[in-house]
Image (cartoon, rainbow, N blue to C red):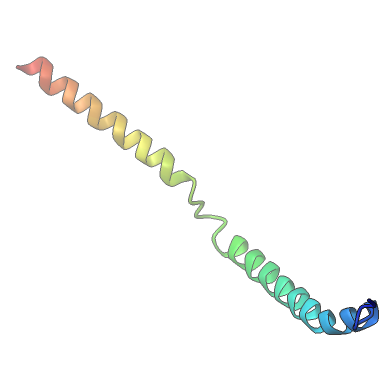
Length: 69
């Protein structure tokens, strides 16, 4: 039994969706670059370093209180 649709029909069907996907990918890349430019001075990964420092200070404070007893 032959296929009802040929390869050309498939590509004609998929083409608008592929073009839409390409357009969205360009938009996402532009937004990504804008965000990187806008927030490059405020890297999020520094937050984990601050948390680690805060945790160390808390531990030192607890140790100091324990030695004072």
